[in-house]
Length: 310
Figure 1 (tube, rainbow, N blue to C red):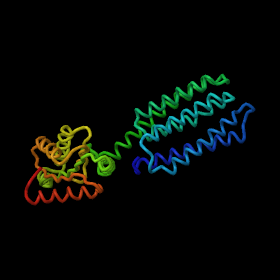
Figure 2: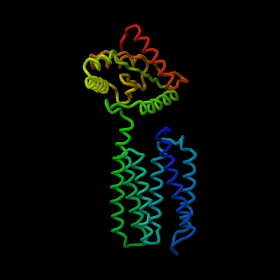
Figure 3: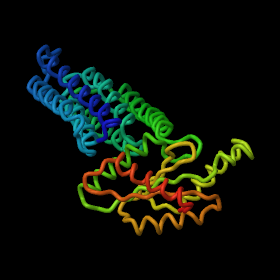
Figure 4: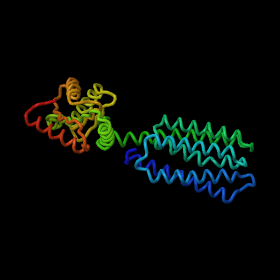
């Protein structure tokens, strides 16, 4: 998980487990009913505290599958508590835990994945509640399930819009500098680990300022949109296009050596008549993102100086 998004998600996940563990231990220490499953509460409480502590300590190094797995694991815990609850009130009282888990999933996971988790949470806890001895909680349970599903959908849509706004250049619709660098860094780390070729290109528009001065900034904006739309149509699904500055764009080309990169860039040139110059660099062992981009930038200005385009 990357530090910019993964660390807050992991920290919040750790908090959910730690709070859940503390509450379970408190419930075991001071049971509210003679039939309260005290050993189970102690077990779940200790597990919650241990998992929460591990997630907190490893929050910067959690693999990508850890968060979905932990969300599923907690849903199973809640379902077990519903099954073993001694009273109908105890079953319905699991509502805040279900809601918190569903909102967390909707906040940190893509909406389709969050929906799947919410569906599993509702199905598992409903099965647990149906198998429990207490009865008479059907109407409150239906209201709870509807609330969980509705809140998951609302939070997931809102989080998706916020992520899109934070990661996308509002004018062209391609990745902005921050999100491009985060994704490109992941590609670079993977390429250095596997030895897979990886190329980076900087595309700088020639005399773009003259377009703004002659035709106005609206015409310049239209040109940027036309160029990026044409490029995006020619790029492969794995290629990453980003806007790095006013009229400067960057490309991350996974599984692409220098020859393959030039072939792809030649195809981009055919999408629009407006001239642009490119600088290209391929990743080498020991590279950092800033280092490989610096080589691409040097190549760009060398080609600018010689009058050579893409």
